Amino acid sequence: EVVLTQSPGTLSLSPGERATLSCRASQSISGSYLTWYQQKPGQAPRLLIYGASSRATGIPDRFSGSGSGTDFTLTISRLEPEDFAVYYCQQYGSSSYTFGQGTKLEIK
Amino acid sequence: EVQLVESGGGLVQPGRSLRLSCAASGFSFDDFAMHWVRQVPGKGLEWVSGISWNSGNIAYADSVKGRFTISRDNAKNSLYLQMNSLRPEDTALYYCVKDFQGGSHFSWFDPWGQGTLVTVSS
Image 1 (cartoon, each protein chain N blue to C red):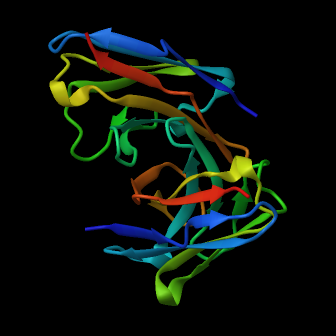
Image 2 (image 1 turned 60 degrees about the vertical axis):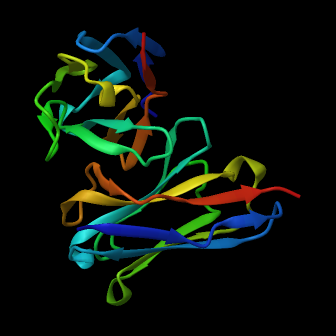
């Protein structure tokens, strides 16, 4: 099973700052199936980025994804108040999915 | 607008069974794979099971294999999860999720329902 490790566990930043979230896989994975989700309190997760770098419909261009192999990154260029949430990465392979443990992005 | 509405959650004793349902609308249900994902309140996400559009491709997480059965009824636009031999560690919010891509292959998840809470406790 591929283990995804997200860092940091909690990221404290201010609106307007740049956020960089990391997702590291225990073995090389296909970037085609590396996905990022956003979850706000009391809400279901929402698709942000798929295929490592493609933004989902309606996602602002301040969100971007990058990476390959074992190292992937979600970047939020300029934080807006509504971006403070928990972010999960996910991978699919060998008929199974795994999620990272999440990064909580909180207001500093 | 895509809507996924889960039902069937509740309090159940260890070892008993429960069947979750998901009513789908707003898209061609029989064109897409579907999944169940669970989340212990305040914790992370765990994929439980997925089923292709024609039920020809079914997969389970190791943690539920042999105890849970996923199924679908395309005529009723409905997805199901039969959960047997429930354990306290199965306690979670269970989300019904639409696969992004159509066809037999699994991809990523969009959108998600609001979930139904399953509590396994004596």
